Image (cartoon, rainbow, N blue to C red; front, top):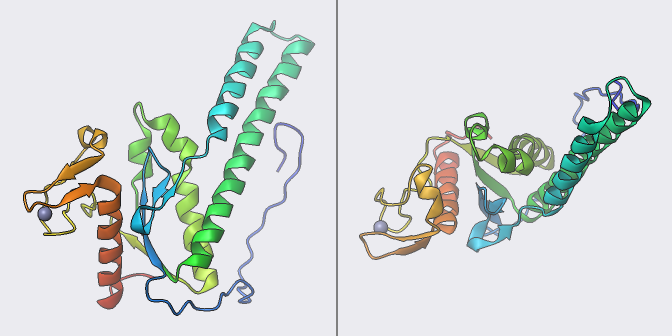
Length: 225
Ligand SMILES: [Zn+2]
């Protein structure tokens, strides 16, 4: 495969798992986390620990727009147009590699620190449409989920994907009632109070529900780990 900037890549699939990435099991029963993926923060983990959305994408995005504008000003068929097109392709490539490196770094930390990882199977394709598309794509959720699953399995960790229709945000983790914010309109509510009196941070509550549901599935033998 040749990229637009002239680099060659050869990719192949290695099917033999030699156990080289297997990690020592963590004995601490608390060493597990739900992962609530979002738009404001990339992810919220156990205890409200946050993985921030990386800022460098905004910077690279501005760079991309600038190079695209420059390209649009060049005359068709000119040598300068060819150079400008190459610059655009290089920024695209830089974004792709930066995102990939960043995701691998997050996954490495998550897998080494947790014996079990529970995450919602986001309907990324559905969410990508509409005005949130850009930040969703920036966040690279699809890439994150696929690589996390693969890395966790190679490390011998428990990895559970929760059904995307599980109401992790709406469910009150204190009383079990469906009183939380829902839908696109619900996204602007960072915190909410349930009728039972519990006051929740939306994402912290969701993480608790995801983790609980994941543990329930594992205990019931229903998780495809
Ligand atoms: Zn409640």
